[in-house]
Length: 488
Image (cartoon, rainbow, N blue to C red; front, side, top):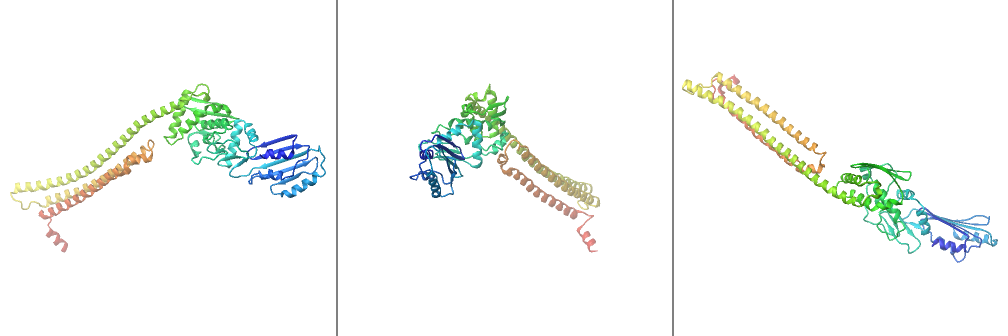
């Protein structure tokens, strides 16, 4: 459009040079005929220029003064000067016209001459295309191209479009995933990933081949263990069942394997399953199928990868069930251990009381048998021995309580070790679900505390009852004697 209009002004130019890229457009013409500046033709050219873009129009007549019109200048003054210079123009004198447009930042980048922009783009080798596009994406999250010429077919990826709208459903891949799972030597330099080049709208076929190749290249980088771009080659290393390393020329031949590698990339980085596990399996299968060239890999690799992953999942489910079983066994042991702790405490109480009662009863029986009467059964010796037994019972009570506390702390440490030991094998959330938020263990601790409090109170009460009983039946220590001694 703008190219045709400026050629029309110069009327049969001898030479036309047009250049266009992402940042600028320029057209240079040379003619030996007076240019036509009537009927608002220069105004028509300027009206075609996007408001976000700056321009510079220069006209040189023979070897005279260069006339310049910039974006900030008034057109009328420029036309007046041009008209004055043409008063002295003689036919055959060379006239040079140059229009430069410097594209500014806006919602879209205007393409003033699609054929010349395409010549620029197709004139780049694939490596240079990657460099140019990557630089554009560094300063813009997306590239939107809009042609002035009608009937130019549309083309788009998730982040690049020509005469098309970008998809609103696009979710960019977090670049940290590349750094977590792969080592790409140029990671700091390149901001692009395979989605930047995967075609969504392919009505326009002009960009199809280079974008397929770039999509394939980035997919490889996101799959391989180690890769780097140097001297227009991709150096790579895959640590699978077999170690593979080599280099691939960054050229249009990469487009041959775009479908395979993009599908592998998309599957590996999908939310269905662990990314690290899927990448490991993919690398293993690639190393098995690899013969002479990665580009020659068969499409059946993807089927093999998915089958291997299903087998892996089945094996992992068995291991997972086994791990859950081990945790449940540990929990059952803890529950059993908590019961044993309480049982030992109860047994200690029972043995202590049974020992004293046995002594207490035997004293009564022996004294009654020997004396034939129950009077004066608890003399000084029997009383002191009874008090000694009660003292030992108190000591035994303190020791048993301390021992129960030690066992309870040991049980808590055992439970914490159980949780820590399985952190390397299961995610924290899963461990919490299996342990039911510690509710079962908290129940066991509550059971120990509750039974301890009951039997501690019962033990103390029993000792007090026995002490009072001894004082009642004793001839050596009586309440009356204690009272007199206290009052006296």
